[in-house]
Structures are given as C-alpha cells and as structure tokens.
Image (cartoon, rainbow, N blue to C red; front, side):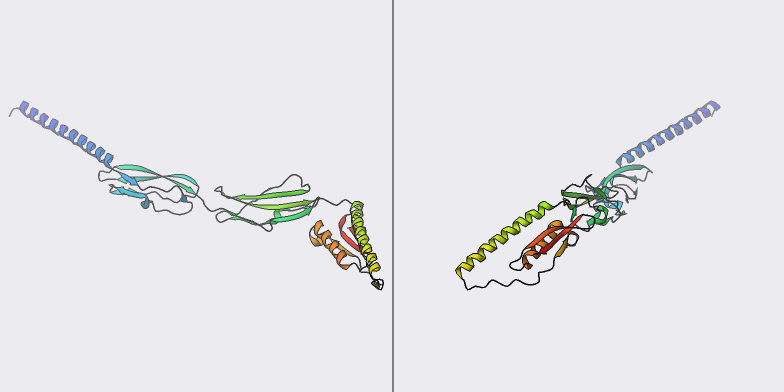
Length: 286
C-alpha cells in the first residue's frame, strides 16, 4: 500500500471519527434538550390564604411529577403577603428545571383591646386621663401595643364616644368605645334653682293647708297632730359621693320629702365649699 493510499485511509478514518463525534454530541444534546422539555411537575390547587407562622411541608403541594429528584424550598414565612417558592426538578440527564409556586399568607389573629369601663360621667372643666381606662392592649405575637385614642379638642357639655384602637405589625386592628357624658357646671349664683324649688315647696304646703282646713270643717272634734319639738338635722349630699349632679339632687329631695314632719317645710339648695364652688345640695327643715 502506497503512502498516498495510507494517508487517504487515515484521513477518511479521522473524518469518520470527527463526524461520529459531532453527531454524537448533537444527538446527546438533542436528547438532553428533549428530556428537559419532558420534565413536568404539577402542583395541587392552593388555598386563598395560609396562616402566618405555621411551617408547611413543601411536598404536600406536589400533585404529580416525572422528575427523578426534587430540590424543595423551605416554606416558613414571617411576613404577610404573597411569597414565591422555587422547586427544582432533576432528571437522569442532569437537567434542572424550575417550577414556581406562589402562596398568600395572612395573620388572622386580631389584637386584644379591653377597657376598664364603657361609660363615664364628668362635669365640665374636670380633668380626665383617658389612658387610665385601658385595661389590656396586646397581640399574641407582638406583645404590648400602643393605643391610639380619638379625643375631641374641647369637651363641652354633651355626650361623646371616645374611640380606642390598636393594630399589630400585620395590620390587624381592634377597637373599643368609651361613652362619655359631660355635665354642665352649676354656676356659683344658683338663686334661680333655689327659687324654683321654694315655689314648688310652697305649692305643696298650700295644698296641704287646704286639705287640713277642709278636714276641720267636716270633723270639728278632730285634733291637729302635734308638732315635733325637734326637727331633723340638715344634711349635705355631695356630687362626688353620688357620682353626678342629678343623682345628688335626686337623693337630697327624696331625703327632704321622706323626713319632713307634718306642719313643717323643707328646702333643697345648692351647697358650696369654702372656695365658692358648688359641690352638692343641702336639705334644711323649718
């Protein structure tokens, strides 16, 4: 065999080997790409929301797959909202194909907010600490919470609803309402009040006298009831003791009506302290 023939044979063999290698690489690549495209991973239907702070098994979301192996994400979020998780499916060709799972997380637990009272009554000009009515304000996850109080700029006589609110870091809110009644302050010069009460008392006395005179005409032998030598002592009914102006006045008048002896009169008048401020009512007998 001549040298030329040998060279031709060797060249042909090399070309065949190269062609075989190129074809092999091409075939391998084509098969690998096809295998990549054939990898599938199907997820189960997910819920609208999942509870925050609960660890979830990532395998539980897989419905079916043909992957030989899967790299799973860690599903343990600590913030509310939508979270994205990547699953990596692998095959025997060494392909790695990613599949995306999106989950929505929420914190369903509202904070706790309670007050020591739901109603309070004050007099115009009195100071009041609204923070003192907060009994509990906390969240199981966040602990103690700051309370926001919606307070009117000026507390004039009338009725108000004071709103307390708290919110946790996941924007869950809780609210409570304190009903407030502001009574008008009694002026120091309260003669009009006493005069009105005196007129009412005199009317009652007039009716009583008329009844007694009619009874004397009908029965001449009747003897008028004896007048007690000692009258009941005067008594003071403080607003602070009864909780409100109306309650103090009501109890004072009840005391006068129930303890006034026949033939005598009683008077219910505003009572002032040493500074001239009206602090209640005083009942006297004459």
